[in-house]
Length: 364
Image: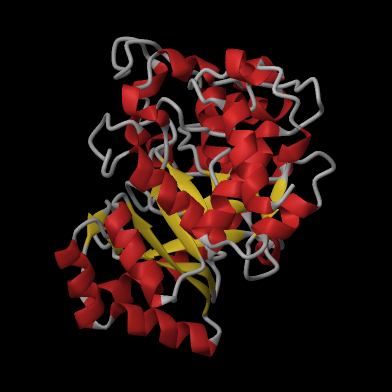
């Protein structure tokens, strides 16, 4: 397992986490077994926005003795009073639900306390006016919440909360379909979404990824908005390559699903290569580097994707991006303009020209 550090803290988070949206169908026994298998594989990050209450007691039993090694996203707005998921902005209901979730999980603290599923301005105003954020911050001061987070599908909402300077993690829907304006939660265009990812990294706010497969639509040619199927591994790698992303949270139904997802860790690079997107992504995505490194290997030894990423991040305000660029063995100025990357780029980026632009920006 590979781990990525939460930017403004010390937590090391597994690049594959676990979503709980569908696991309740299998029942508590299988949910507990899935948790045990996840722990054995090195997964340490779990999202608890479940479709029902089943995973909570199951996970509570499975993690006995290892709680301090795990991280949970708990959603202030997900309500399980009926045994099924419900969404609420009522603070008293939220408090009762949080108490129940903590009791079921057999823990007395929350790693990431999330403002849950805030997609509309009116919803954000409601949870702010009702005192939900103040309640999470009160628990944070008391040590019962370690970090504040937000779950949303809307770039505008995430940017507004980022402006407030209160969150360390955002759960956001990232997949090729949404980024290229296909699907129910495809909110915001290519540039707006890419700018959000860069802003998160620049400001030290991590991203946990939901809906990496677009609810399974991208995995089937009949339902894919592109008319061609992608694989789970292509979708996972696509999300992990985005700036700011710490972990991808596939929803699994049982141990077989989890074993298949875990195969990503040992998959060959060609199994994760999503450059096929360049053949059916919309025209407004052309000319934009997505850091896929399909242009590799560079005859001059440049890491073209990383050079592009540090350039974009530096322009977005990441103070560390320039120093990261300076530490690269080969820089944009070392480009020999051979055209190898231009010919191989699936997104038609004029990389040789861009290397000149980046060289001028950084000075070498």
